Structures are given as structure tokens and as C-alpha cells.
Length: 159
Image (tube, rainbow, N blue to C red; front, side):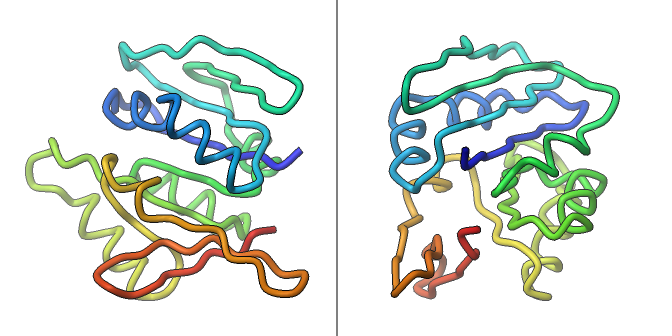
């Protein structure tokens, strides 16, 4: 099973959870070749209903003692821009997309995401752009998910 793991850490980021669990986002995730989405929703008030079909599974939970197993299983991690979450995913060598919380004041998360992106470690975006700007490219036997940002294509290997 190809798996996407979404984490908000210990925070509340309802816009992000609502966006990634919306029906059109679930269709986009499936169209990119994934058949499982795990949502770690933290202390938020948006609580999507878990479900499982023949072709897709959505799992939802608030907290676990450790996210290591979910990160290990994931083919793609989509995370809030908390330093701990970003570094944990990158240490495991996982493709990482970081979603910036635009509602935060003095947004240090944006600074971290910009720097890690500049160094080639991740792609970052806002909730409303995450699945509107990505496409799947297949070339030979290789697959890559590309996000369009500022007129350029940014790639993450499709494992």
C-alpha cells in the first residue's frame, strides 16, 4: 500500500486537516497512486471520519507516543512546519511537503520551511494550494510528483 502520512504534531491546524481530508483532496491523493492516508490531527476540532474501501483507506488519530512507525511506513509525509516534525521526517529520508499555517503571527515556521526548501530538502505551500499545484509525471519506470511553484517545477521522488 502506498501511504501518505499527515501530521500536525501537538498543535491544532483545522484548515490543514479539513483541506487534506476534503473529497477532492482524497481523489487527488488516490490519483497520485496512494491508497492510504493517515491523519494525525492533534488537538484540532476537525475530526474526519475514518473509512476503508477496496481502493482507499483513511485512518485518523489525535496522538501516539511516537510517530516513528507512521513516518517509517509513509511514502510521503505532509506536515505542519514544526521543527520536530520536519526533522523527524527528513531524518528518515522521506519526501516531505510542509504546509504553512498562515494564521500564525511572527511565522517562524515559514522561515524554517523557506530555508529547508532553499537547501533542497522539502517543498512548502499553503493549505489552499497543496493539491491544486501538483501533478504526477511518469517517465519510463520512474514516477515523480511535481509541484508547480512560482513558475518552476519542484519534484519529489515517488517511491
